Length: 395
Image (cartoon, rainbow, N blue to C red; front, side, top):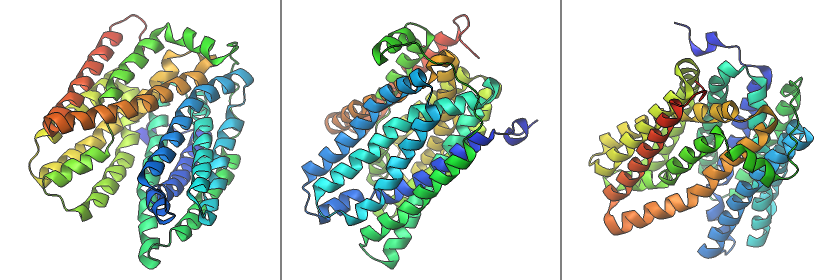
C-alpha cells in the first residue's frame, strides 16, 4: 500500500504555507497564553481581559466573511494572505513595549485583524495549488504544521520563563523572530500559483446567498450542528483535574494532544482522499462522540490519557476532510468566500457552544454536558450520512 508521502508530492506553495503556519503558530502560542498574566501585571481587571479577547476573536470571525469575498472578487488571494500574516508579525514585538491595557487591546485587535484577513484566502490557495483528489492530504499536512507550532510555542515560552521568571516582554520579543521569518518563507515559497477565476458577486451577502442554496449550504448546516456541541478544550483539562490529574500535568496533556494531532493529521488527510471525505469526516465526528461520552464517565487518570490520545485521532480524521469538502462543494470562483463562511460558522458557534456546555455542567453535571456534545456530534454525522446518499454529493 502506498504511504501518504509516496502517494503525493505536496506542491511547493502548500509546503511553504505549512512552514509559514508552523512558524506563525509557534510565535502566537508563545504569546497568547501569557497575555492574561501580562494584562494583570499592567493592572487590567478580569472584565477588561475578557473584553479584549472577545473583541479580538469576534473581529477575526467577521473579517473572514469579507476577506474571502474580496479575494475572489479582485483575485488577490496571495496578497491578502501575506498582509494578514505581516500584520500579526509586526504587532507581536510591539507588545514588549506596551505599558497600558488599552495598548494591548489595540495590538491584539490588529493581530486578529490579520488573522481574519489571511485565513480564507490562504485556504483557497491551498485548494487551488493541489490536485482535487489530494486536497485532504494537503490540508492535513497544513494542519499538522499548525498543530506542531502550537506544541513548540508554549514549550519555548516555558523555557524562557524558567531562565527569566515573569519576563513576559522578553518572550514577546523572541516570539517575533519566527513570525518575521515566516514572511520570508511566504515570499519565497508561495509563487507560480495557478490562475483563479474571479467571482462576479458584487457584495458579500449576494455571494453568500448563492453558496448557501446548494450542497455547500447543507454541508455548512452539519458543521454548525457539530460545532454547537464542540465546546472549548479547556473543559477537557478541567475534567482531567476532576478525576485526579495534578495541575502540573495539564500543560503536558495539552502539549501531548497537539503533538499527536500533528503526527496523525497527514495520515488522516490521506485517508480522506483514499476512502472518501464525507465518510472519513463522519468517522471523525463519531469518534468525537465516543470521546465525549468517555469524558463524561471517566474516573481515572489513565482513562483520561487514553481519551486525549483518541481525541487527537478525531482531529486527524476531520481537519483535512472538512477543508477539502469546502473546495469540493463550492464553485472555484467563490472558494475564498466559501472558506470565509466555513471559518465564520465555526468561529461564531464556538462561543454559544462553550456557554451551553458550561451551563449544562453547572446545572446537570459533567456527564450531562459531555453527553449533550456527543449527541450533537451524532446528529451532525447523521446529516453527513444523508448528504453522502444524495446524487453528486462528492466522494
